[in-house]
Amino acid sequence: MQTSTTSSRSAVAFQLASALDHYLLQLDGLAPAASGACSSQLQDLTESVRDIRLRCAAFPALQALFIELLIGHSELVFEMGRESPHRSGKARRAALLATQTQRAQNLLRGGIEPMLQACGSTGAD
Image (cartoon, rainbow, N blue to C red; front, side, top):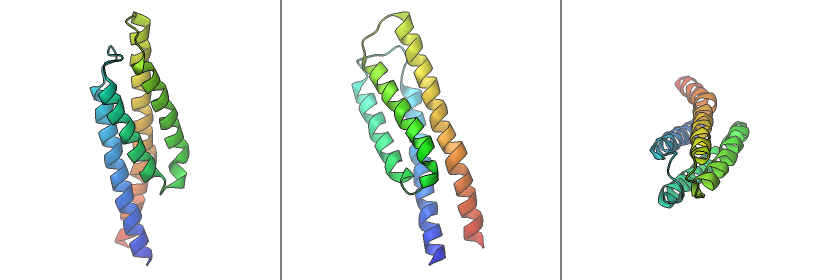
């Protein structure tokens, strides 16, 4: 029974890592200069956050990192949805994109990768 639980947690951890990789690729595809016209990209990004949320639910230890990601996502979507042709708007969007990318990387590297290593060492025993 323990092996089955470990195996399913490992599978969810791999799915979460994959979802975060996909989210990071989507963030890379957003242009800081774009605003308003990228609604389909923002919709896809929001769907990815929902997927990440569902997978994070299996790991209570990741909740704080996920909450940071969720708050940053909300800020990013709000700012990207605004029409702001000014340089300050573009700079703010670029800063939000960079910060959100860092949050996603923190969740991946700081939360998921150690779990995958632990699941791998536990499953090998």
